[in-house]
Amino acid sequence: ARTFADLEPVKSDSLLALIELARADTRPEKIDVGVGVYRDSDGNTPILRSVKQAEQRLWQDQTSKSYLGGRGDVRFTQLLRPIVLGAHDGDERIAGLQTPGGCGSLTLGFKLLEAGNPDARVFVGTPTWPNHVPIIRGTTLEIVEYPHYDRASRKLCFDRMAEALKSARAGDIALLHGCCHNPTGADLASDEWAEVARIVADRGIIPFVDFAYQGLGDGLEEDAAGFWRLLDATDTLVAAHSCDKNFGVYRDRLGTLWFKTPDKASTDIAMGHVLQISREMWSMPPDHAAAAIRILLDDAALTADWRAELDTMRGRIAALRDRLAAADSELAYIGGQKGMFSMLPLTPDQVVKLRTDHAIYMADSGRFNICGLSDDQVDRFAAAVLQVMH
Ligand code: PMP
Image (cartoon, rainbow, N blue to C red; front, side, top):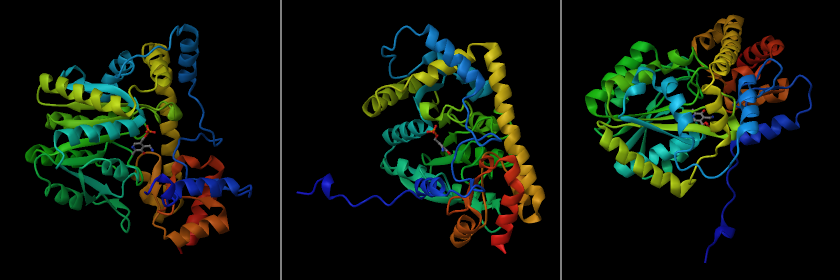
């Protein structure tokens, strides 16, 4: 009989392979823009001051690590709620619970949608974050691709996206990035969100908003505007939120899943299913970051400090975007985009050339992490990119 001893080797994840390659390169001028985490101007991904203080209080005050239950830290989710939902905070048709990161939230959300309708189709933009597809493939839901970004013009291709979404049937799902699109940085403008809201409402499409970078684009409220518009427009919706980037707690795995149905009774029933499904997968989410962020959000001074730190992160990303955009007209498009990522119109050969000739490491797709650049690397990076492009 075949067993797991007979499995074929997994084709290596190109991003993980890239991390290894970058690590092995000893050239002092090395630039690593492959990795997907925020970096400060010294190239570090520090623990936020406000988070560290909250963790100190947690360490001092926590008296038990006994089980909390499937929803995780309920007070944390309550405190996060107005930040995620804005004016929809008080809508009792919307429920949320803590999950192991945005990944856990996406997985749980798609399993909920599968339980609701195993024959639904999921409209997924191309390109998208590479983990979306395997997560959806873990369900019976069928994937239908829609064009999100046009590499040649370096722009969101909204008309083609809207056209494709119009072919969805009632009950189909539209996966949308709330803000700071990964991998392209190409977000929807306000009028485009309004159009998507009209399309999903008219056709009974269920939006699934992946909201992993709130606060790293234009600001906490600004980045939620598209999501809030969808909440205005429809009464059936799912959202996967992550606190891993905006609180910098990546490895502690802090996310939340949010869902809305037409009435509170149905939302309560959906929560019962969600808890049943999560019990099979992880039983309960990890506590540490949720407890720390609960302490942080419960304290006005710590919350204000966190907002200031988030402003600093966002400001650094925006400043780097502006510098790259100003470096050459061919890079101007980077200035209008949001979040940590952007995509250079490079062939895989050109990406390899950057690696071998310039010690610059990025994904084969040309996706790079803006804040992987330290302030003194921007000019050399732009020059090297332009050189291999021509
Ligand atoms: N969605 C997108 C678009 C992401 O880029 C990421 C993280 N790279 C996630 C979800 C998952 O984040 P987390 O680390 O919180 O699981």
